[in-house]
Length: 215
Image (cartoon, rainbow, N blue to C red; front, side):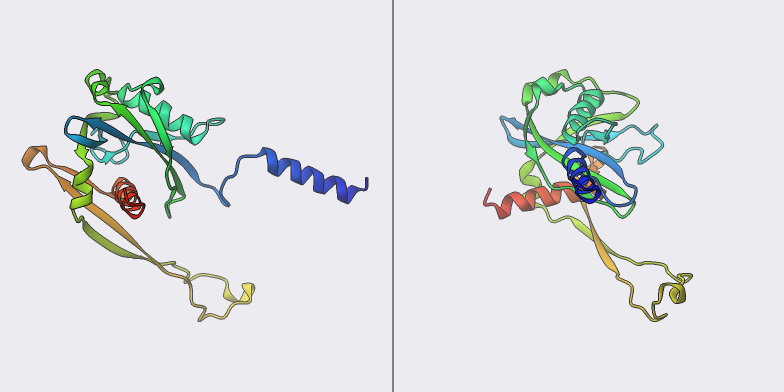
């Protein structure tokens, strides 16, 4: 076996054993979209982040967090759900993995869909350092409600790009994109909750995908 064959075999073995990641540095997170089947129909569980947190204090989100070394995305979603709101993995039936959200801020967000029984909500143990409160929203609300949508441009700032060194014309047309953020308002007065950002995008995409599947 020559050196070239050995190298190819080593590359093949490495590719089969390593976890698939993303090119360039990214931060990996995982969340759990929990469905609650109750007497009033299907509900989606949300949590409001503690107002003492440094990042996104008071924002509405799903249970979840950053993936730890050696942890799979699903293990992370289950662990974070238990740590944040006290629902252990034994009480969660994971229905499957949903689509992955890639943010321009180098964030990769894995999403999982699980279900818990309604009585499990009577035994929540919120982590006060992370969670202010937990609430549910009827699934039908997202099917019947058109969110406020805000669309903005994603533009690359490349004024100082070394065009000559790269062999590129100064009038090179850089790619631009657009992002749409849905904003849902649920409830009234002091009870009103605003669901937007990545959480709004995930729940909006999930409901629309289920509708496309005829569900």
